[in-house]
Length: 462
Image (cartoon, rainbow, N blue to C red; front, side):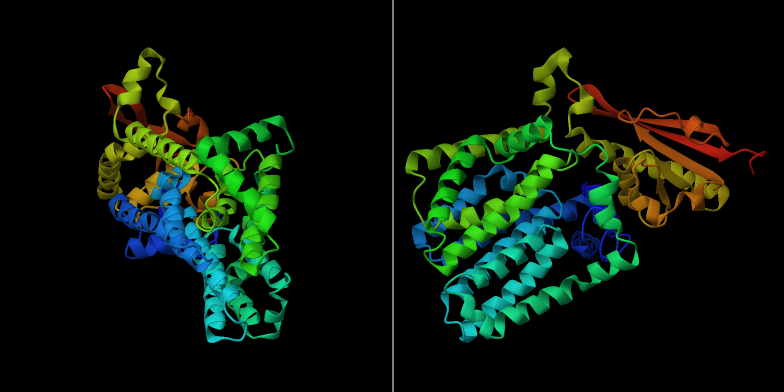
């Protein structure tokens, strides 16, 4: 997925099939106009993900937390696995979390200020900017905009509609998201069609979807943090009418929860981590009330720290490979993806350079699925055209349509163990002129083999 977002940097546009375009802009800035290196990308994500708990602490303070509560909110966010582990990756979730919590901080500040004060106006405008950026990060950011509109309709906040602040904030949101809306309309709604139609052929309510949703929350949040979140959400529900800030935090939990839970229950392609934004307002409320208790709090932090360390060991050491012994199956070990292209990048570049020296132009690189195509595109850069044959369609089909490269003189077909396809069958009008293998080793085992097949157009087809 990170490689796909790095590939976005090579094709700047307002939105893509999977997400709005902010993550592509971030990647492009990090890469100086191209795809960023893994080191640059992760230096940035390490910095921003480290700041996320402190943005949450700022939101808790803005919502009325005392000093102890501010620390409590920050520490809680530090050790939730979904943040401690998940936000290290360069993905739309990172800017979404930062802007979502920042918007909650601004909205809490505005609601605690006098409606016609400069403080209320400036904080509301800040919320508008951050809501717009959240929506440009991930489509679920629009649910926060809905929560804030409902917050201004609650008792004690309705008079704010008689001021400039909420209208100006909504205007800022509209200005920021207009390029995405225009792109969607002019391009024939590709993102909506891809997300809600093309990838949903097997969707429908099922026990499988229920299990994935619940299991995902237990894994990503962890059981003890999940129980603590329930206790805090219950308290927030009881207080929802006590003040405009309480109502805003409750609506910022409820408004994302209903559509995201419904989507996860209906779609086989939905991912449990999509529900993460609904927990952020709960984390802010942790700083306002001390109802979790010392025992549960320390136990949850200990569990979160343990899971984070286990994730580090899983990725950074071969310990899990050794522990599983003969039962180890490399295909299902996700960290292998993080090592595969470290080994494969230079050999593939050498093959591309050799063909370019021979023919005077770079070959077209093609893969059977976007996860391979994205790795190749991010590694090779814009000078080498990369196409893809993902059956369900992907951004590569738009960036380099098959019709433009099908009869190219030389194609390099790249695949790994997960995609057992025969390039000669995929492209019967070509002949195989050579096959290169790159073996990736971890813990003394071959965990991935990347195969690069050179395919030339036959004289008859030419």
